[in-house]
Length: 159
Image (cartoon, rainbow, N blue to C red; front, side, top):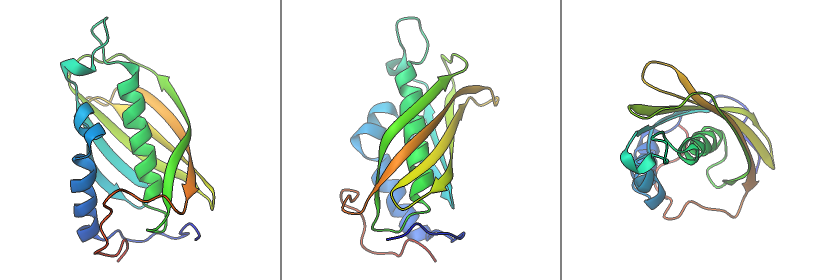
């Protein structure tokens, strides 16, 4: 299994299945986080700020931003991997740049480097006005035997 080297178009039929599966997983539901878009080497996630995200000072807890960054980094890297390859985060670094207490968290992930055993991605979380709330990087390990639970076996990953 090798990382894919050139730009490929993701199959919209598979993406629909992935969005349905991911957005209905328990952790995404817990955080009200939603995978909104995937393209070659990029991802887009959103989470509306809710009361359940607040820490005692009335701002979104840093763990919420870390989670959406982790997910955005993962999905950006996933777009460039063979369908059978699994990924898991082995390191996550987050910089918190501004507080947020209402509105929408918008995360955009980007795959920086895709390797045979490790991948590097980054993500930025902004509000609707474009203010950067947090930035992070993630190192992900490629694990061939790791599969998304209930991963669809139907459509091909790439057109």
